[in-house]
Length: 89
Ligand SMILES: [Zn+2]
Image (cartoon, rainbow, N blue to C red; front, side, top):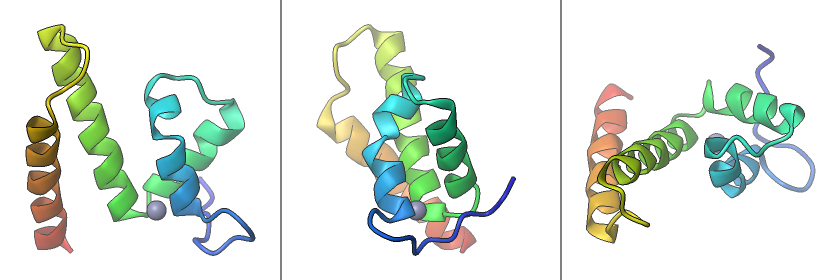
């Protein structure tokens, strides 16, 4: 996979990744965008953390059959992952 640099003209890779997070998780992306997303999170820890949070929340929500995860749960997962990422980095 080709690493994609962060500074591109116009939309930054982080903005792209975060802006299409839900499309990615719902598999609604074009193959090009999905590839771009994967290539980006492969080397961008903050975006990978963000993606992991949403993925976890999505799984938990699906399991508990709620429409949306409570904001507290989302924040808690986010906090834990941020700590993990910080410690690792
Ligand atoms: Zn990023």
